[in-house]
Length: 637
Ligand code: PRX
View: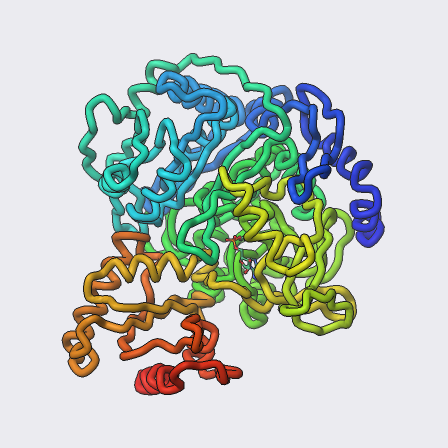
């Protein structure tokens, strides 16, 4: 077995040779001329001159050897549906979807926005876009009209693919009215909307615009739509993520580099083989869903289990805290991917549920998206008796930055640490203000990456190269390095520990949210003069959002019934605008917000006070009583 240290060194010292070898893991229609073009940093172009297609690599190329093998297993504990598509069946459905999208005018380079629950049609739509060379923009189904409208305006999709409804814990969430409202709010209007009717909620169809998937599918049952051969550097998709400003960024990804990065990660990091089953509990609306529900496992020739529902309900729609383990047994899952929050939810269930099923197929459980606390890691590790592998990455990177590459060399995980830098990533820690590289163990700094970033990494911000460079590559003065905006330390053995964000991004139950977006939504309420939103530590969700509002009418400060009413209204405002996910756990009212003398909001100090920590050096503070008000509020509960 190769030593990981040597494997990693080669990826850094001989990147062209290393990645040319990894590129053999996928099919190329035309071989590439150049492995990495980094002539114009920070824009790295991978596998220039090569042509390939993500859908071909995920579906078509497996038809020769595994046409009858399961490819997509859909399980919904919301509707009770359980259905398996073989690679041949998936191929047929994707072609029907591709033909339908083509009928609606979709061509290479067009955007298709996908706003869908976790149903097979969402996977068909993503793969059909890849097949046609259309750029998909999946928007998480938990987002509401305001978020959706801003994404429609940024992506300017020709077609939107959606459904009548999603469902959560048995409660139907109609999507169509949210979508209609978003289209009403947006300046860009899609030419067509393609709708899956799950018969969960009634739908009003807009004549001339809305089409039913069932109708179009029936017209294209025997469709044969060949894969469009795309330049390796052609855009495969964009996915929106939150940052410091209120405007979400469209993280843009290429085609060839992404396919190679995923194929390599399936082998070296997830240690998986064709014919096995992969189960990621994420959602297609997040990057984990793109990389490890749809593309990664399929490119590797594995069956992928796509799950709709909570981890605590069974296929009979009754409570069942063992459903995930039941599925591991039934489908002989070999690798499972989830988030620490999900494990913390399961921790409240009967521990016997972990030993009731035959989990012998499972080789490891991978957890990502938020810090993995030691008690949670220990609990699940002792229960499952398989390695629990933390992995740290971002929407921007597309695949793990820090973890353990068990497919290269088996190593033990270290509790509290996601691991060591993955091949291709030049990870450094820099001093927050001087930008000096920190070389001593256990010094806290900002986690950065030196360019060129590896294949699969974001190409740029959709339609905004300047924002890409200014946001990510210019945050450290005098140095062009990519900032992750995370704090970290490294121990004497090179293991990293992630200590939270350096910016205004919060992480609620593994979902990345921008506090500025929430603030903008709250500012939309007519009773709000000023607002600050911070993330506060939470035992179950990791963090929750908490809002501090200066009301326009100061009498609210003395009127608890009035305050409660306004709090409810503000929460509803966020629900309707962004979605329940972004709803603050509490809205508290204050007469003034803590700021510096120059007017900068002291969010870190507010957060510290909320968590009962020392608020740090506040000598630049305008009005110290402002922070005291928040402290008093927190103490009164
Ligand atoms: O702050 C880090 C945290 O989540 C952020 C990225 O979130 P997102 O773009 O949604 O991508 C998630 C991909 C798995 C990071 O900047 N984060 C992610 N993984 C971890 C983590 N924090 C600690 N430990 C992790 N394993």
